[in-house]
Length: 569
Image 1 (cartoon, helix red, strand yellow):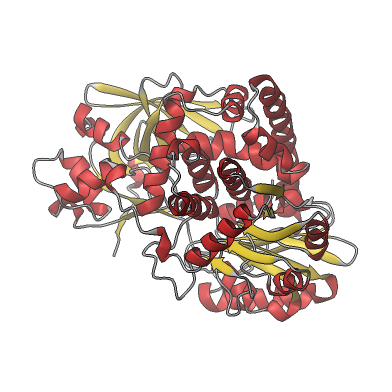
Image 2 (cartoon, rainbow, N blue to C red; image 1 turned 180 degrees about the horizontal axis):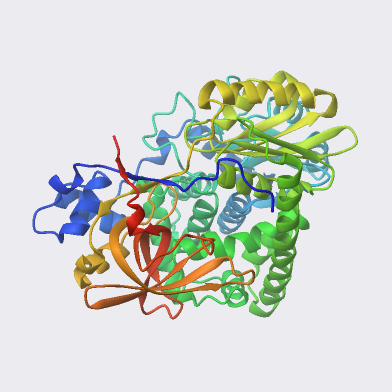
């Protein structure tokens, strides 16, 4: 593989150098320090953190447009109108449509779910789909996980006699569509106290309000699993309301409330439902579901979620599993190609254009490039006249804002601070590259920043007793916005280190400090410098048996090298 420029070892930075002074009294010391580093310094805060059902349950009627949306859907149900449900082809969009379809049916609604084809239609609302839905008899169009940037498309829907309700969570542009209601927690006029709901979370809250409005009992266990799945896979921060949704969803899934489609997907993934965690959703179920929209059609994933017969669900899950294997193969080859096209150059923003990478995997390639080179990355699949792009960013650079600055060059665009997409005519590619690179250079500089690992606490490995381990493992659900606790232990004796994995890229480790030997895994670190004594940065995770705990080593270095620990804040 091409040698990466600026691929220095990551920096180690203590998240809060004063956390050890602010820990909760009578809590185990390492645990208290980790909690304080996350801003949890009182027993009341710790109780809410460890018991997510106590986290805020905000009033969904505070979401702008919610009341108007409820009244319009109520009318559509009463008058027997056909409601078109238009989603995105990723897991957040698919789970949003599944929530709406399953939730509206018991209320007597007539619904027509629609997910566009990534390859022939692209992301978001499009004129052809709107025409076909109107021709099918729909009079109300509800979008989920898209629509907030579709000004022209919503205007066209209105011309055809369709009322439009938008349920979205993407960054809101300066001008929003003329929809009957645009429900989005990121609207600047939103009084809703939490703006990081995924689209499936918005759909879930919409359903809650609708059931209450109609006086029908709402059983959250019927839908919370889908909301949890979409929230995790869309990398929404697992704080506040999202943490409550995901914790409750995992509880339902682990205790026998697993729908046939997810049970079948768990089986082909080799994961027992009782061992489900947020990582299961993000790294086992999510990629298999997303593979449908990347290589075939997301309707396969939607059918899986809605299927009630386990045998038919298993056939669909097996199809997704095969698609995911092909997706992995294509991603490896495409990433290698992108690295070769970039070569040793290290521009402030990585920009790859090729007709040899399929539109369905450009986002995955961009993500890998951004992670490896610590630069924002844009990867475009070039077509005859237009190119479709996915962009991934790094901390400190708002990629969707940078893209929106160049909207006059684009056919369509949308996304989040860290992930975005757009379509551009090929004659504008060179100018777009220059403008985005200039924006990145102005904000990030021309020298590549080294990756930083934020550490919650430094402590001897031997200091982790049963209470510490139990408290640290209960940070679940973990993910974006609530990372696993990260510890640094110095002077650990390295007993064994063996390359493992299909390509020998990972290290299976055994380390010892005091009287305790720990097993661990260091992903993508087979080339790390080792010695008899090492300093390790790590988190705790369940081992393969699901009954024990091992180390997930994020970085390691010989103790003799004494890598400095920077101070945060």
